[in-house]
Image (cartoon, rainbow, N blue to C red):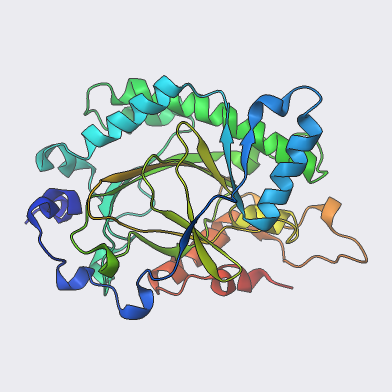
Length: 343
């Protein structure tokens, strides 16, 4: 069997039940949750004009309470969002032979197609998903390494990457202002690592026994998600709640680096992905992170005698290495990701 034939999408269509190594232990299965109507949906049209201050306050409040919010009127056209989703539906249905050259076990590969988690061979239980991951910045350096099938891939993803990055910059500028940081704080080295993770969850014959993605928080500065089928859940006050897909909206998620920079004012969002038995789900994730040598720590604006720093300063590469180490040990949680940096 070739490596790419391990992809769930290559063999699952005729599966009537889960293979034993896809059945999660009882304590890791999805049980209680509700789909929440409370998660804020914010209108970026208010970015300019008298509504700007209220919008910034809403962003900060949502980032504290949920670690997540959704945005509408964000500037990325409905047509481009639909075309991008259609592109990935086509990509994950390509013949195995067309996907073979993209399959990789190297986490740091600039373009990587893989199945389940980061290290399939060492997993006790596999996740019900396939993933394509690649960098999108700087475009001129990475675009030639992107998939060449479907034939329009590079054209569509160049447009999508440019538009989503514009939106990301606008949102980070609003967060910057809301946190009282110096103008341009999130420009340059702080947001030099930009890429995409596209997760495909085929219909699952026994979704109650499977898992799409284990609970985790992201290691980046900001995470942007396009989804159209339900499956994303977040943890709030020890309860799991579902994030309702809203047509043509983006989910904006707060990762670990914003929690550290804000000195614990903002909350990194613990989340997971679940499966269903009837409909394939694709989540298109854009991530924005620091350069490897960027130094991260609580911003001076959030440190004082009455509010001392809660985290040590560190290089982002060191954080990534620890994050991957804990992930490989199946031990990733807030304590193991942030623990080494707590003061």
